[in-house]
Image 1 (cartoon, rainbow, N blue to C red):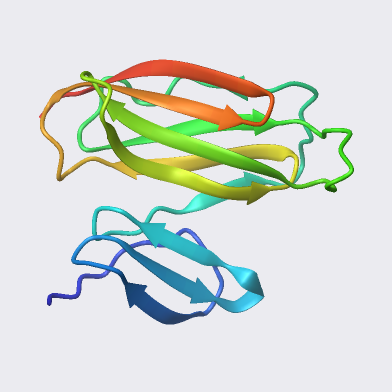
Image 2: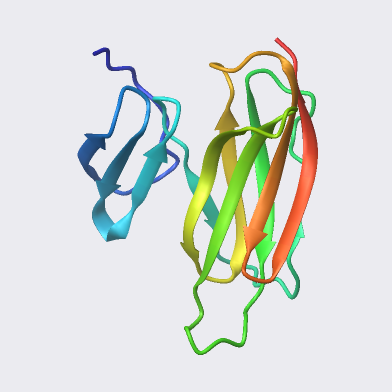
Length: 147
């Protein structure tokens, strides 16, 4: 209904927008870039090309406490797998009652260090949890939204 300028954190030319409802949608662009929103805004995943980590790691979000945006960083190492170098990775936000709030990442990723920003402007103040889930790894951390 209303369009607002948002930073996408990508240099790709964005071409197509498709919303499945009022807040969930996808944007596709050059080079296979796909951005997803679960709050009507853009969630961009940034990969650090210079590092290939040796182990999985989920870092503490920064800043914490935050208002209304925070960054979450994680590492995915190479895996010996007949499926290839890519692995399915999920980064999920939960509220204090354990309800899924949003998926920040839900896709196949190559090994690397990634960072994603969560804009919680449509969420109430409180304690939230974020969980990194892969085929052989899971870790959860706590963060606090203060408005």
